[in-house]
Picture (cartoon, rainbow, N blue to C red):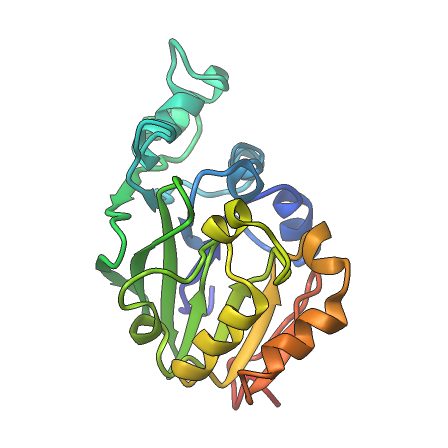
Length: 257
């Protein structure tokens, strides 16, 4: 290892495959941070962890995620629901709970997902991490801020932009990885869950973001991508990139070069 901490944000469908294609190593991961427990953000977590059985890893791998409510478990209850030796859906992997049966422990850290609540997390090998509780309809959800090598990188997760202090949390980001799931024509239910292109543009501009990377593209946002981009550009004058699988943006120098 090169002494640099490695963080994975979310583990939705496809993560298991892309992690391998990208040359990822379970031995080198220090934390997995989950924004929320919708299946498209966490479905591949058990498969990813199981892949670690074939690695040399023995040290713990902390799993970070939000508090729960009546619809969603808290992160620790979610992990227990996966691996509990009596009731877990993947109970044959019970060793992940305490680091037994040849598996490494995956202790869960539950982060307060109250809207506008900022939680500073312990620095790990030069990587500072903070979480912000954000509005994603009825779903407890978090955005994450990563500070490493003099750069500030933000992962919005799913949010609609109505969170107090959101612009301040993002302020000065070298890179904002922003979920872009809906067009401006989306109905109120979708708007309660996701930010429209106009809101994305205004948020990035207000926060002084240098580079905006649009991610989490869905059928609705892909139906007319040029229109969506033009609506974002009406409000944001920084650089806009559209995410692709296996895209790599260097930390050295400016991320928009």
